[in-house]
Length: 561
Image 1 (cartoon, rainbow, N blue to C red):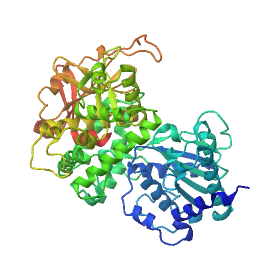
Image 2 (image 1 turned 180 degrees about the vertical axis):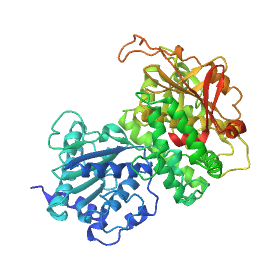
Image 3 (image 1 turned 135 degrees about the vertical axis):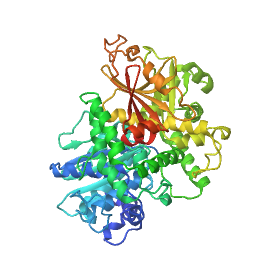
Image 4 (image 1 turned 60 degrees about the horizontal axis):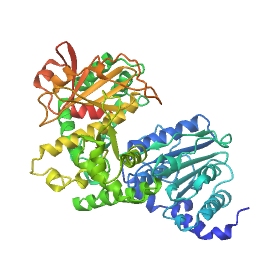
């Protein structure tokens, strides 16, 4: 039996964090239910609900993401969705799991707020185990599933014991939901005793919200200025999800874009149908304005109305993540170098730079630059590299911050002047708007690459200009050229001029080149100003020098990603 007495402070603390155990009103849950659930929440709830329907008795479901990204809000919303004493909003009632459990079947444990980091590493596991055992023996019903939500597992200093300690919390008929700041902290897969756990899920990254996810949020929630109404927001959700009633053209477009078995011609036809048949002209105009508004606000919503307060929140949370969480995880002795590299990326977003230039600016060698970029890209998902499509060995790169707001807060004011506020200002700064548009399109292209099974998002220089985003797999190439004012003169020429056969890619784990026949049946131009001719003819496709070019309004590209 656990020594309950030695953990009594933590037991008393967890009772305060789980007010719903008394089946009365919970201030925490009432507050999070006032916020519209984001698509990541629906994805988590849908995933857990499906495992429940499949009869999975024991489950580990991990999520991870930057400090301040919204993980805690989602976990508390999940509590509200599960228990039968909370009046969770009707949205998403197709899930049988909603309001299906009694309050005492759910344990929410915020590890950082509960001060587990004050304990010695060897005592942290003991205190955590004692609290979970107390929940099972004194709070939860003897029968029925237990839901254990551990928030901020990154504060636990368990070393090599991390996986075994967290797995041991899962008994039969237990669902364990974890949150951390990087993948390794919540990934419980791999070798070891996993036979008694039915399902250990792959960690889900929680990223800044995509453009389509911000549509429908009220401005007082940090949402966009353009109001579409709940009906249109739900309509877009059904367009993207096969399981909901009605047509799902966006989902079908992504299936047709799949580089392992899709059909590009049908994808282009689907894009034309989505633009001309599913979205009326008034909504198109609204989506155009909403996309520009998204460039200003980014994908992390804050309800503070004062712009300086919101900026301070975003900046402080980002720096906390860099200096405290990411630097600790990566054993970075000088975390200020991560800050400097992020600022360099913000000032040179989308520009081709040499690694030697980065080394000189940061003051570290090339190997250390590689380590930093890997930490910021693969682990933190805050700055991502794009490599040259045509080079075998990469000495150059393009850096993209993944949240446009970070570019505002980390660059000099002379560059981002007019974008300090979240509202549209009477200051024209087309250069910086173009930079933000390029960053946001890259971020969404990375997400699209995942959806369509592309290897990565690369770029290619032509004599006339840049092919900004190239998705490819096994020789099938889907290139996108960004045509956004003031850089919109040569996009069609660049698209027609692009030669996919310049691609060079090595075999996995080798420097030997793959023998591939690179083909690009369609070229895509992402534009913020679709021509009246295209609209009048009812087609997004034009021929240029024997090349099929599909013109995508900027907002439409963001919508399908």
